[in-house]
Length: 164
Image (cartoon, rainbow, N blue to C red; front, side):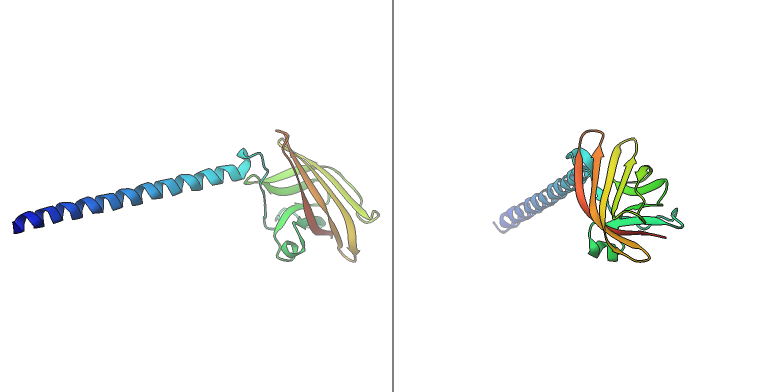
């Protein structure tokens, strides 16, 4: 009788461990799938445009304009847009760092308003701003509008400066 109780206890103990391992294994697989799914929807599968921060571009040597989402991000150097005040604009969109052609740009020294148009194969970008302070560098506050070739459009506030 003793051996019978020990035998059934051993079987019961082994079967409980297998259920715990199976539950743990399936839970980790599910969470991995969820992480992958959420990462996929962040890019552009959800119809949104992912705008990411990036460090100031090394390609820009002299005059430039650079903007963040707000004053706090600007002071923390979390830029979402930069250009060389001439030909090239830089952004990180949908996980890719892009160098795009400036199509048009207003003269910041004369105007109280800033206006820039940028194009690439996949995006059309418009930067509009009003001068809020003008010393050596001119501070601007405004909006950044990004239109994707699939028709997706986002508009976000920007804060930053232009100067040499």
